[in-house]
Image 1 (spheres, rainbow, N blue to C red):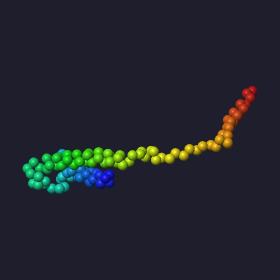
Image 2: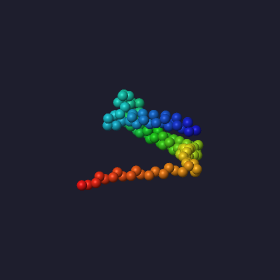
Image 3: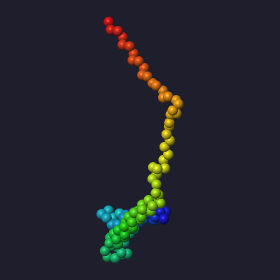
Image 4: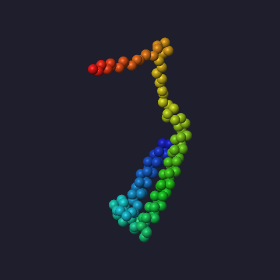
Length: 112
């Protein structure tokens, strides 16, 4: 199930990106490269259609993201951190720990 939702997420991402870039703005976006869309969408132009289409795709994207997170958490019951194995280095009890002593400070020369 998560594989299908993940593929759908990528498809929705591509569609959402293209629909945002095709919207008319002050710099016209990528809509300038597709020619005049006004005859295809009516007298108002593509603004109303593209805004509604982008809203619907964005809503589907958000719902798919929530569903993907929910189903992923249902499949994965344990945390990744619980799979980490920690090895302990233990000193055997029969061997005493080495005793270190600090070296003596050098003698100061006698003053005259």
